[in-house]
Image (cartoon, rainbow, N blue to C red; front, side, top):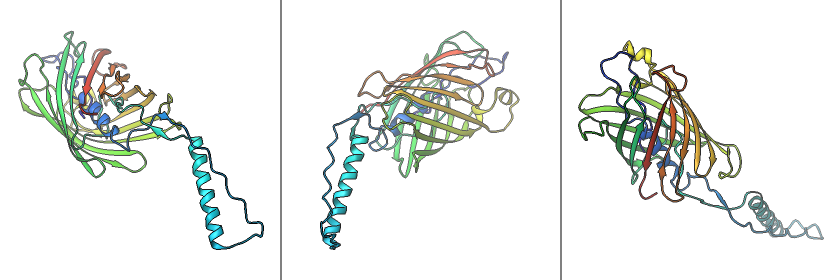
Length: 315
C-alpha cells in the first residue's frame, strides 16, 4: 500500500539544511503487496498430484457417424486433453499469501483496494549530504476495487523524533489491465503541516508481469517491469536545484528469487537503487526490503544504506 521510496528528495550540496527522509519508500511496497495477494492475482506455488488421463473410447468399428457417438467421443477427447494438461502443469494451491514488494523508491501501478490497510517504517543510515540517520513512518488505506478503479490514500509522518510535526498525504488511483498489467496515477507529498524538503510530485506508472517459467515458485520465473513519468522528486538533481518545471522518467525491473524474495534494480529519475525484498514469514504480509541507494552517484554524495519495513494485517 504505500508508495515505496525511502531516500530523500535531492537537494544540492551547500543548501541550508540536510535532507530528511521522505516517506516515498513506504508506498510502493504496500501497494504492490495488497494488489498481488488478492485471490486470482497471486501466482500459485505448490504442486498437487495430477489425475491420470482417462482412456479415449475407440472409434466405432462400423465407422458410425451418429451424432450421439461423435459427441461422446469428443467429450472423451476433451477430458483426456484436460488430464494431460494437468499432468504437464499440476493443479496448484497457494504456497503463501505473503509476497515481496516489486519496487522500492518508485511507485508501482498496483495499489490498495477496499479492506486493505498497511503500516510502514523507513530508515536510512545517513541523509544525502549529511551523516545523521533518518526515518519516516506512515499508514495507507484502500478503497474501491482495483479490477475497476481502486483508490489508495497514504498519510506520512516525516519526523519520527516529533510525531505530527511534519506530515503529508498522498493518493493513487489504480486499475488492473489485461495481460497481467496495471496502470496508476497519483500525487504524493501533499503537505498537511510543518515544512518539507520534498516536492509535491505527480506521476503516471505502468507495471506488467511476465511469466518466464510455468511454476511461480521456481527462481527467475516471474519478471516485473515498471515504468512511468513524473515531476517533483522524479526530476534530476540539477533540475531540482534550478527549480525547472519538467517531467522525468523512472523505471524498475524486479525478478523473483523464489517465493519469499524478489531482487530489484530501479532508476528513480535521479539515481539507481538496488536491493532484495524479503518476506520472512510464510503467512504474514511482513515485507523487509534492504537496499543501496544512489549507486551511480548521479545524485547525492555517494551510496547509502536504506531499509523499509511494511506490514499489512489480515493478509
